[in-house]
Length: 198
Ligand SMILES: [Zn+2]
Image 1 (cartoon, rainbow, N blue to C red):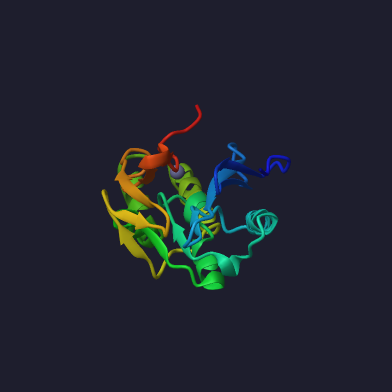
Image 2 (tube, rainbow, N blue to C red):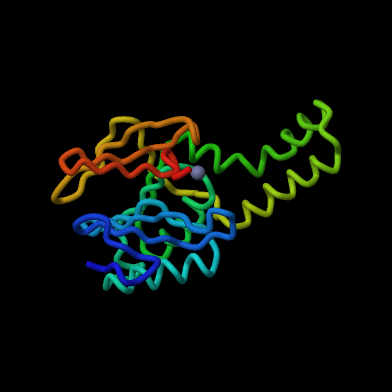
């Protein structure tokens, strides 16, 4: 059992938590590696050098490289969860799975900034604050690659492995299309940000 390294821990038999650095107050984002066939990552972390290296080293400690990853599941479309999915998919050939609403939000966010700006201004938000908000969104989006090719999952879908099956549960709230992944036999639920510590 790997427990000595700070960034990686075994949370269950052949299920590992990799905590990847993010430059936000929460400091890390959770990525899970499920070491069952097909080898699967749940979420990916941001598209930063630090996050990429942390994931590379974490997987290396488990004896695998990016080329061994066979599937990428995304819980929801926030940059710290899908940010480097496209890059990892290109390196590994692993297909990406996500809820279609989250995919749509990821694809549309940069195109909708003009609309957002006009709504904020029309409703009396001071111009300086609007510029600041737009700038914040634009710089945050630079930490993630928009997804292109992806397969869609919805509530109740099955995500098969050779030895078990995860079931998707749609849990809107934190994000409209957030999916949790449930492993009923083991009473394990991968929740993304549906459950947060505080
Ligand atoms: Zn989130």
